Image (cartoon, rainbow, N blue to C red; front, side, top):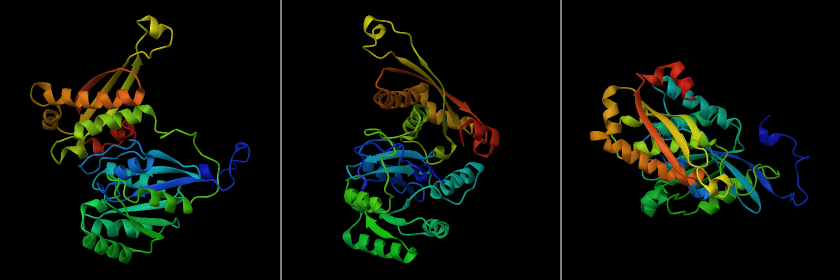
Length: 321
């Protein structure tokens, strides 16, 4: 029994509408098909990292969509793929576990790419689930109407879907319609999260994801698979002025982070000449983390080599996989 199937009778507030719906929706698809962009568009705020590199998402980031008539908890899964490493196998296991615990699945297929073997692989995997599946043609803004029509026909032939809808997460096209479709498949339930809460992901995980996004910006193709980020510790500095001592102003925090790559040669890609690129990564990530935490941040980044960490069970456990 999943969390959202439990008895909420003792939690229902006096103003709870019996027609209100709430539940979980998982986004699945090949790597780099627009799942994170769509998650952020649905939520209306950035909760999932975005990159033009494959395998950007490695955690099931939950975003929460609040409506007067319902609440959707979005689970943005890692890209489903034929695994080549132990990490790949564990990411696929993460996706399968997620699919067994949600009310509806959003199968994302990018409109600017033809339906291929990777999509067929996922479609075959989804055949075993009894959960309703909405096929979503993402990146619909990137193609002509004729190409989009052909893409929708190809998706229809791929499997037996509850719904098929084209959307653009980047422009917001038909995102509201997708929300309405998702709500149709959710059970009657009180809200699962307080109003205004956008994600239940721990701050430490969000910080690591933001740093990883910054580090992936503009690097070679092979690096994303080899890069992992671990937030070692977050230390709150003692108050140093009257406003902070009175609790009127937040104190600064020190965040110590390890960036792991698999080969010494990859350290140079991250660090850059004379450390210029690592400083740029720190500046880019610090702005995002400051906005996330609502306080000033000192970011201490260290790049380390952990040879073949994607195949090392102990290292994967240390990194939370």
